[in-house]
Image 1 (tube, each protein chain N blue to C red):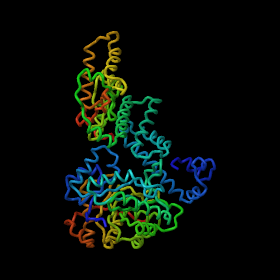
Image 2: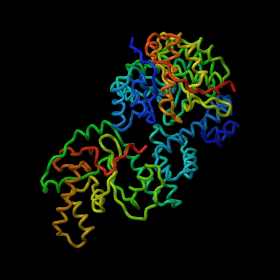
Image 3: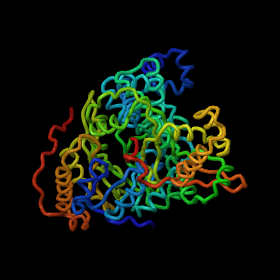
Length: 299
Length: 291
């Protein structure tokens, strides 16, 4: 079995955060790099990734694998991801349980898949191909979806569970996406957590969403809301393989200290619940209280 | 489905729209089963993403155009219909679309045409980036040749370098835009510039004089240096076919450009072309990637 090492509490790397992160390397346990910002890019991007790899443990997060496209997986793309992972000594690679393109047409948006046995089979086959080409632990992330794609014959929890069981991949559980979906599609997020294989969760994503047109949107533009942290408190103790938790921020960047304070808050939660022991050891001294978004509620 | 008119008529079951979209009856039923409001939202998100990709790739043009860019970006997003396989193809296509628009409606400030051209060229160069080729070119070396041998070589342009003629001096305009300051519209003044991607993949630019531009343009990979020299001589000194100092100047220019890896030279003896990527620090100003 490929090793999935403990990483701790980290950040998704964005150029807007670079200066603050590099000036405070002791505040971030690891970084998540967006694969597509380094693949097919000029050499200075690769140099940047390698420089970051000298200072932080890295994981690679893709957005354009399009694992749900009914077409053979993009071998050339995967080989480039593998090259990036090799050069940065990445600990694992992840992408989304979605599709983003079909041959000749790029949507550029994480698009949901039908929750069906057919899709489970398709994704399982693709995950196996991906794992063979990558040679790294491979994680799939749940997305925020705004509509259920017909014909769906299973619940989302059944869909995720069957894919993980059949393909052997790990899970990157985005708790913000889970809460978005739970509210948008009117189901219980805690029940969802009880239904999926939490023992396959290696990494957790946390972010803030925004509310528009009666829906919670996956915007990564606000602090992690208290309701998402409650899900973390509930789920993390049930995740024996949990190795990494990171915050994603893509817009409306705050002062870096605010993000560090959020990371410390996550560390405190994990330490308080003694999950796993590594996180308790990684916890830092109590951080000052930050103002988390308290507006989050069922609309 | 990103075209709102097509989407509406499809969902209403219009046979012509169904035929145009190439949907089977089963596929149409599936789409009609999706919550309309949410489908609308998703289509807008796809459009919004495409819009962002287009605009983010042209940061200087976007700053110069301000709000007036958005209706054009929207028109582009609507028309392009998602035919791009890679994200970086979007801003390049948008730049070409804008160029067509500006040809029809000359803009204010006039320097916008040049700023857009600069970003378009930068995107083209970055778009052609290929690591395998780059490594091959990086590994090549420039041999020293006698003047006589040099005249028989065939100079050619390299894929990461363009020599461009601008209508105005874009250097202060670009500098101001990078500092997020409103640039003053410079007076018309032909400005010749080499734009290139250095070995780190960053875009650099450097002013050149008109004869150098003419020399660059003549390096078509077909004519020998001797033939290029003759054609330039007739252009710059018509009726003075025996101007030996001009030939010396051309040889010196060719040698200098080749030594700095700004052109490649194909040897007549059948040897492989000698070419190399410029190192960093060529330009007067180094910029990051265009995006």
